[in-house]
Picture 1 (tube, helix red, strand yellow):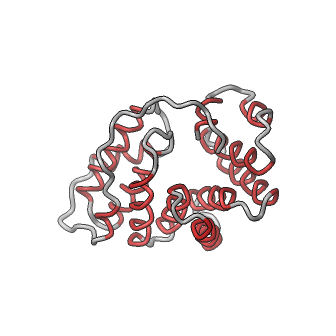
Picture 2: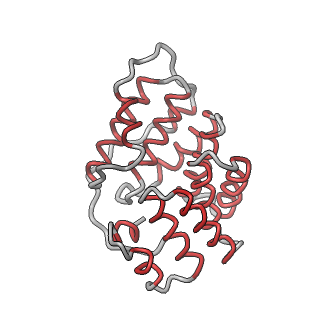
Picture 3: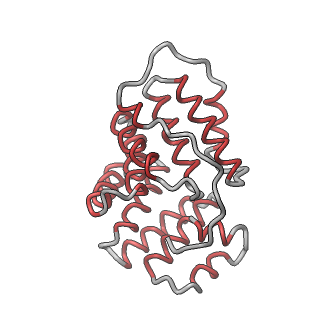
Length: 212
């Protein structure tokens, strides 16, 4: 994510990433993330597939492909399997918990999604550019679980975090704004939703680009 933020809107962004000498699999993962950020979701999946071919044992390649597939609602069984394998390899990595949470969310498994996303939100570094979207995914799960009031609160937090990170037109932000304006329901989410409640966070400090 830091590399993607560093590249920004540069037209030669993919070439810049390739020139960093990250190695085939990490480079394909980073290029996939760049494509995703630019709205080229099919291209992102293709790049993550290349990363997995380059290093079939890479948990990062598995988790990145899982999240891209799940975000598009594609091959959800495979996405869930890939995310589970990645998390089994590195159970304390919040990125992998996030990938699994998104896969569960797209399959309509809100309770499992809340469990994974709650764990990810609790340990994900707030200064990383992906944190606002992670909080938005938690808001999505809360809304689908029936807790519209807390979903709106969490979506509002995601938008505030996006502003802190300088995000203005991320694809998820229009959906988050819609959730903040929905009337609250009378039902509340089940216990796992409590785990997904993100803590209040301080403004994110600037960090130097690092490899994914």
